[in-house]
Length: 73
Image 1 (cartoon, helix red, strand yellow):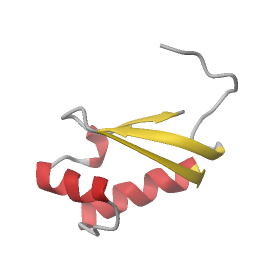
Image 2 (spheres, one colour):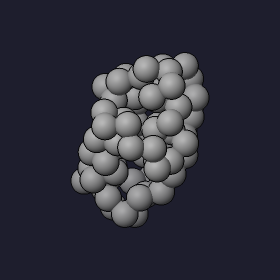
Image 3 (cartoon, helix red, strand yellow):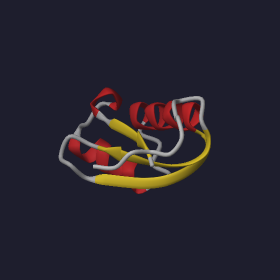
């Protein structure tokens, strides 16, 4: 466990993030805006638009967007 040195939320910008799926697979990425990134992932998973490996994995495992856990690193 570690503590972040700054406050972060879905409005945070230019951050590294981690997505954890129910099978405990982790996907690490970076984004200019967290909220927009989350919405894009949810949309791509629901519509099966495979642009990144995480979306393909979620579709193969039948994971729903709400099953994901998001963390700002």
